[in-house]
Length: 286
Image (cartoon, rainbow, N blue to C red):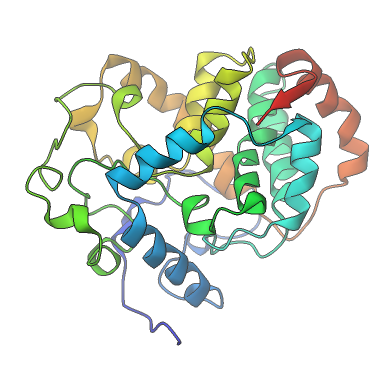
């Protein structure tokens, strides 16, 4: 069944206020209103917003946070993304591993002194490997949002895709704070399950030495309603506010380095392997 264009989406008002690093115009990114990939993207979000409930997220934490699914190096995980095209992304239709190197190189060009930041650019989407292990893409990719409280208007397709989510009409979970206390901190909020949270859990489980700023980028880079929509600030604490500029800085590379001009991955591999060896070496548990 073809999904029709449902009209302007509120997320269009929250496109990051930075200039693209590529020649592609800023308004051409994160277009959830039209385009040749619209049907695929809308369907992924419809499934996500129907099934991502508080109970579902708790089950996924129990299933994945113990890192019992595989043992592999970080570079092996990155290489595996050659098999994946993100069905929630309206900007690209090529394997995700190329986006990893595009993001890392964009960061390297403007932040040559921050090797940990470059590494975060390389690995930030590696949690999408769950899709290769049986998870549907609506539980892996796309923008994230808190569960356990009201779904805010800045969530992409908010008005049209949550109608069958039972949490929408729950007397507690549909309130502004839901199960949380004001200013509880995002670290204490359950986000919709996806690659952000999974990779964060992998990093913590394997005791990787990426700085806290980098871990925040990994954990919340898909939380567009917060870092671009200024929503859910009532749940944020001082740490979240201090980390927000880092997440915003990362976001402009994650979004605006996407291009059909693909990098020469083999020539870049030795440099980024040295960063992996420094911050998350050896065989990791996934």
